[in-house]
Length: 123
Image (cartoon, rainbow, N blue to C red; front, top):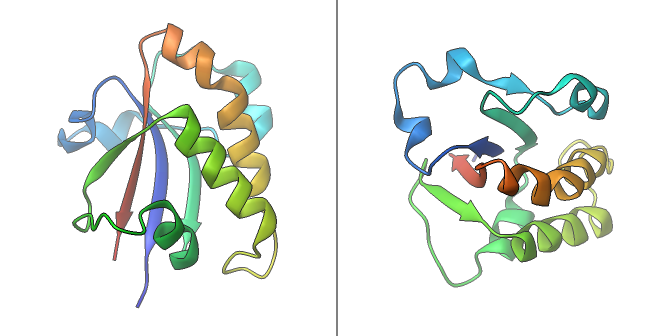
C-alpha cells in the first residue's frame, strides 16, 4: 500500500484543512531554499514516500487516521532523524536525512516565530 507523508510548518494544527492551504506552501525540502525563507508562509520541510517503517516507529501504539495532522515536538523530530539516519528509505538511500537535519536545526527559530511542525500521512 502506498503512503505519502509530510512534515509541515504551519501556524496551527488546523491550518492545512483550509482549502487554499497548498496554494501558499513554500517547499523547503532543499536546504538552500532556507537561505531565502522569511518565515511568512507555511512550508513543506520533509517528504517521505512509502516510509512505513518510520511511520510505525514514530507511532508504535497510537493509530492515527489517514490524513490526520499530528503536532511534532523537538523530541519527535530527533526521533525521526535518528531513524532516517539508520534506515534506508523507499528510494534505497538516505536522501531524506538532510531535510530532517535542516528542519531540526530551524526548529527553535520557527517556534520562536509562532510556527509549529506537524506530521501528516496519507495512504
